[in-house]
Amino acid sequence: MNYANLHFHSTYSDGGFTPYQLSLIGKSLGYRALVLTDHETDGGVAEFQDACEKQGLESLVGVEFYGTHDGHHPHIVALDFDRDDPGIRAFIRERCELRNEFTRKCVERGIRLGFIHDFTWNDVLDYARDGAWICIDHVVGAMKYKKVIGPSESGAALRQNVFKGEALAFEPHDPPVEQTIRTIRRAGGIAVLAHPNNKTHYVKELMEYGLNGIEVSHPDITPETAQLAVEAAKAYHLYRSGGTDHTGAMSCCGGKHAVPALQGVDEEDFYVIKERKLG
Image (cartoon, rainbow, N blue to C red; front, side, top):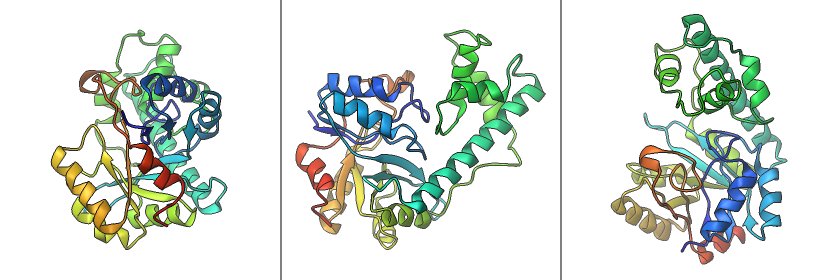
């Protein structure tokens, strides 16, 4: 059993459970330490850390950011950064504003095309938590809450015809991964290459920007990638991280994600991160 789960999401981004619920589920699964890594927002971190403390669990600050590099879109998990750092505060604010504006335009297009009825963007804002990175999951949740769609509906038609249909003129483009990594490091955080399938060969390049961690445990990486990640961590003195992401009991996802998942890191790896033993 892994000691810590360092990668999963809540209702502040595209997860299905609140921070409080995640603390309960994580403890019930046997984890001793948890890090909430919502997409591009730390809006739920304070709530989550308070819940973990009450459950007797350890926790660190976390966020999962996006980036672009060489035509790819690597995800970078930020661990244990200073939330009050002006640079990362501005970065999070900008990323959330771009995502929320994109989602608003999608809702307005859905209304204009007739896929959404008796529903407005203000209904989404009333439903979403303050500080949320608002995505289609919040739109579908708000529509269910308003009883515009049934409680068992997945919103698949909305996803296909409104969010993934003809490209919008406005889209929230990802920043250069160099900017993402350097923002994390300047805030005193650890920058981790997430689910590195087909990306381990970029490690040395990304280290030039400040990358200092890599996920070695994740439901979506192959055994071969996991081994390459372990080797890279050893060769370049990188922090080893990992977690369940959108899979398993902490994800609230169905389909291929509704399978057992207990990925993460052992106690030693967690304390190497917490105590900054690699610098």
